[in-house]
Amino acid sequence: MQASQILNDMMVAQADIFMALSALALLVIGACLKIRPMQRVAIGGITVLAISLVLVLQQDNSGVAVSLFGEMLIYDRFGVFMKSLVILAAMASILMGVRDLAGHVIGRFEFVILILLAVIGMNIMISADNMLSLYVGLELQSLSLYILAAFNRNSLKSSEAGLKYFILGALSSGILLFGISLVYGYTGSTSFGVIAQTLSAQGGAVPLAMIVAMVFILVGLAFKISAVPFHMWTPDVYEGSPASVTAFFALAPKVAALALIVRVLYGTFDALQADWAQIIYALSMASMVVGAFAGLVQKNIFRLLAYSSIGHMGYALMGVLGGTTESLTATLVYLALYIVMTAGTFAFIISVRKDDVAVTEISDLAGISARSPMVAYGLTAFLFSMSGIPPLAGFFGKFFVFEAALSANYIILSVVGVLTSVVAAYYYLSIIKVMFFDKAPDGKIYEANMNLTSLVAYPALAFTVLYIVFPNWVVYEAQRAALSLY
Image (cartoon, rainbow, N blue to C red):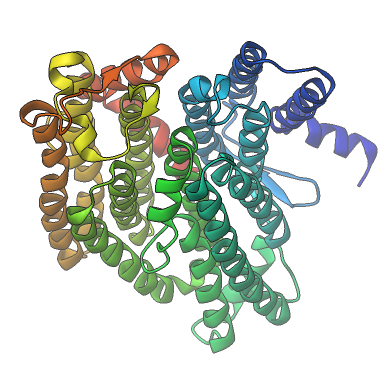
């Protein structure tokens, strides 16, 4: 590559390069200074500002897809849309972790550095145009997340969560690599474009080895979005990790992995749509069913939210099935609304404490409506929204994906989706019942101290409640993002 071409590519990728340089600079500052609690909070604030600047730098109105660094990465509106969701999720997670950053639960400045590094990996995943860049981004994200899960070294559960996630994550990475090796062995290339051209040239005579390779790649990626039956790590990791880390797990990695699934299926394996549609169908249905029914018996609030996120990924996959611009738009809208609802839910839950101890069990929320009514009513709005009750934002998200599934003639899947939504509504409503009607078991009521979490909770609440007033903006941006893939 010529020097001028490299410079041009770097200008296009300036947002990601700026984020990488910010992570390195903050790491050097933290290592050279004797960091105290308030200085850790300051580093967290600087990180949020840096990520905010990245959000501005990456906006692209040209509408032209640009291939960078020898076709390793591609920058387009789809990437901008998905990266924006990841960055917003990272900002929310850092703001929710500020209190723990100043205390003993996290208490080390590396927390925000690891989130930055994970986001860089996710951005590479979203922009990947080659199997090698796909894997590099995936591993950068995964290695950061392994450490974040075990960040609270004083907690046995946190160490266990990190170890479980590492072992299962390494297994899924190995499965993914095996699929990539099969693809390379058949096509002689790791480029998405070359692989797609090779498969298209085969017509209907695609060898079984390529279908097997696609299955292995999908299994590796399904693990990252915790789709059933590759969800086994999710409840334990959500329960054991620090609360703000759990929020990050529930938000950003799922968006990045689902974006990568869309790129791989809609581009690389587009010729195999009849084959991968069966896999996505099974993943979607299993995730919705398990997410709904397994959540019914949960007592720990974070385990319940883990199964809730599994169910939501099932709904999001319904839109992927259609293989059209309209169905993909439905998935992107659903993801955007999911990010807002989940961030707001975690923000309210993390703010509820007793003797500076975070809430862990659903029963811990008993009586919170009397002590902190704003938190109780805000959390109620989010739970109603995730149940799909109109006129809140979650209703529109489910309406779009159900409509996309029906348009693609997936009637049974749509019926299962509606029924599992009803089942899942039970455990959402049970939380509301505990907040408003149950008494605290020991007579001591947890109370909310919003702190900086209010910067996440209240804007998310306003968006969720008022989404019906301006629904077209999100749909418009999602349509532009979906169209860029065609």
